[in-house]
Length: 300
Image (cartoon, rainbow, N blue to C red; front, top):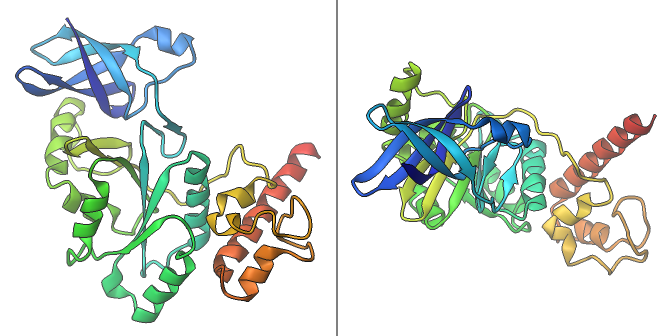
């Protein structure tokens, strides 16, 4: 017997596949066939797959087919997402905006829309909230300030998640798990069903996990990160991943302007006139420098 389903979690070579059957949703513990390893392919959370049932009573199976992906992310390692939700704290800890900008660049490379969610708005001053809002007002990402602790602003977030498969990411300690527990009230229950098989008790996010939150609506919970590397991106292409710069492309004095030391730069002019956030521009300059140094090391 074969069924189609979606991988909702993967741990230590086991993949947990949620299948919709005539009697409702069922979760199967599966291994992937060796043919995928021989082909250099690895199943990811979010993959649509076909499984062969090995033991119906124990809910065990084997993944026999991987269907084509709409997209694939390396970090977090997930497939078939069309939206990203990146969570940072508005205060305590102070948001690392350089890290946030790296994430936005990564998502832009994949053409994935991003929601920037600043949690703990109750611990930030109005001045700081306005500062963060101003910095990201020019980028294409939607920005939302919430308090998971007091459940403020989460209704709008729930609205933005409907109809999407969203990956949630962010550094540790920003209240990401608390926020997910609000968005997915039965997250612990779903995790518990898997935990019984793998003998794990407490829910901690060490692996990517997928939750169904509504019709055609899914949410990935992913491990926290403290650093991100911009792989496969050249310093010359970095400017294309800052949406604020795009309307100025072609207006600079020199074709192919990198918006750094060149005279007659439309982007730098917009920064001086506060039409582009100075913080975002300085972040771009630092990221450019990092990519430049990386290239030098590669060819030295």
